Length: 236
Image 1 (cartoon, rainbow, N blue to C red):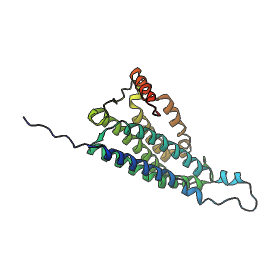
Image 2 (cartoon, rainbow, N blue to C red; image 1 turned 90 degrees about the vertical axis):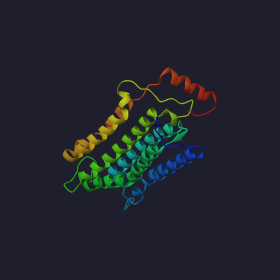
Image 3 (cartoon, rainbow, N blue to C red; image 1 turned 45 degrees about the horizontal axis):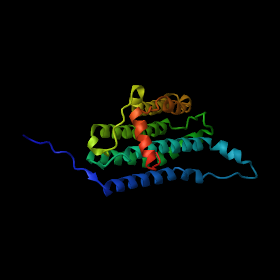
């Protein structure tokens, strides 16, 4: 009988090093997002500060939106990797690709913010604006969400990668497709940026609505597991 060989697992310190590397990459990427704001000139000739803020409102909004979305995605990523005892080649490459997409976000968020700056308003695009930049930005955001979802699905299908006390989360309803729905919504915003940039500039608000509507609900088993974790003095 022919035995199918499984991918070798990297465990122990290798898992810790992968988590530390991932956290470091995300920390650097999320810090780089603020660099375009440093180049913004301050008030000139005694002008009030709000004139600078309103003039660069697009860049500020894109920075804050990207910063908080990446922070939420990192939190999900951290929760996933805190439950693994090892990783195989598919999980390693999914994580590496996820990090590559994260690293590209500072550049694309800067370009996207410049697109708003060219029009002089956050809601009024000029003819010189480039909707293709917006499309690539939202495609990249969708990629980050989709790759995170793929990592979660890979772990649920390969329980040998999880710690003995950890179990794959079983969700019901629309929450089962939360990652795919959010990724699809990102793509929808990107496509709308090509045809109706003004409408697309308001669509990111829907991300927060979806996040609340699709928030996973804890099962009784998960609540009990969380209680055990808390009793051990660990922070959830």
